[in-house]
Length: 380
Image 1 (tube, rainbow, N blue to C red):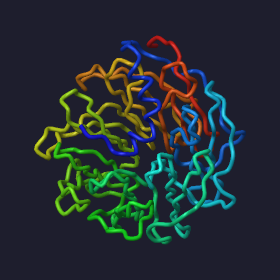
Image 2 (cartoon, helix red, strand yellow):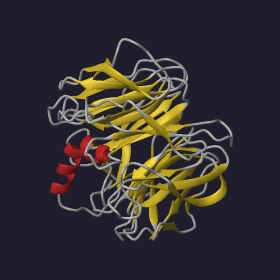
Image 3 (cartoon, rainbow, N blue to C red):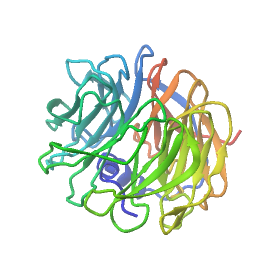
């Protein structure tokens, strides 16, 4: 399976360490927390990557949503403590701040999705974790919620996929903005979508090109857009129920068949898996969790080093879940994490304290952003 470019770039320092360690089949607990701020504001996203080149994963916090705040960069001291500073002098309405090397200089740059009426910004990294605005993309009037970065046309430069929300079933397109190979995004092309707060990029049909899964956010049907290999998406397949309200989604090979499956989280509560059957077809959804807590964030990562991808779920005013995978994608054992405060809009995964185990960063609204560290644990 070909992974999206930003996944390879942002977490390469963490993945290399984890792969070098022997597999360990055990469950983990996430009871030890570190608050990253003194108070809760309106944060919406977290990204992880080595932004200053010291070999340790750092954190980018996207803050503001509809109300201007300063995005923050937190530099890791390698032991799980962080030195924080503002990304820039200007606050803005940010939902996501995504890391990727957009200009090919081997440092992680920053692409920021701001809600209207703010400009959507591209920051260049000086190699030391300091960022400067060097360009924009798209239209300031877009109600952009999430940006995904992936190489859509095979030129080895990450492109931007901007998920735009309409707030109703009214059609509002999301967009693809191709990289000009210089780290700029001069033109954007609309996608045949309606309303989205997240777009998942993966090679779902195994043809070597990155496709786009677009869950419907506001009462319509979700679609997968198939890439022609040049970053164009003329063909699509609808999946799932006729009416969905999906805020969170992720892709990963949960059953070990070499094809990325889909995991979706509903605004009304509950997590479902869509098994990839091949041939551009997905099976009917299988409920993995059914509760009333709204699901706002999902990630897929190997949390217990057994080389099987697990599912991390963030919720609203409720503890989140780590769903440990049996390896066949048929049974998942739940371990709770998080104190249940605020709304977990975003999660990011990496070994942040250097002990070889992946930890969870939670970007929260109405509660301080925080890390939940992996510790030895037993099922309760």
